[in-house]
Amino acid sequence: MDSATLIVAATRSEARYAPAGSRVLITGIGKVRAATTLTRVLAGSGDAPIRQVLNIGTAGALHDHHAGLFLPSVVVEHDISSAELRLMGYPVVDRWEMPDGDGSVLASGDTFVADPVRRAALAADADLVDMEGCAIAHVCAEFGVPCRLVKVVSDGADENSLDWPVLVDAAARQLGDWLGRH
Image (tube, helix red, strand yellow):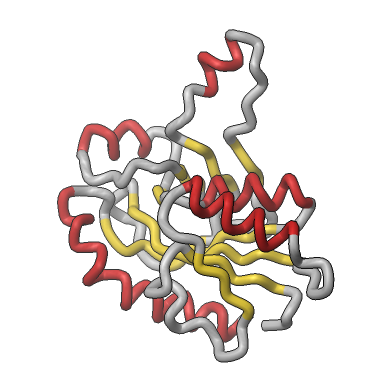
């Protein structure tokens, strides 16, 4: 990984196996923390410019057949009232296209999805769910920095998702392996 690439993860546990010497930013969990932390770094990166952001992390599967590593092609912000705001005349960006994706859609928002009703609603339009992807994509778009999302399914976005702290290490190993190859 070159020094112009910034690896961004919400938690240290998700980035635990990033290759030694990688430039890693831990943002904290959720859209606000991810956006403010990444904005601060991109705004102050003058002497060491960042030419690419890799957002790595875990995701919940919204479909039972999803497992493994994904490179989402689209990330959508699922917990903003975009349609209503647009009707009132406020243009809201709530969807970002990601280059070199695998065709999957990531729904991103501040809600930790563990409810089957919410999971089913999100599954109508997305494959995976996380809590930071849309914020990272938004900030990167604002700064004109290419962004790629790399997500590993850690859970089924259901009642078993509350075991996430135990499940994250296996996902982090897959992320580390992917980073080591790219």
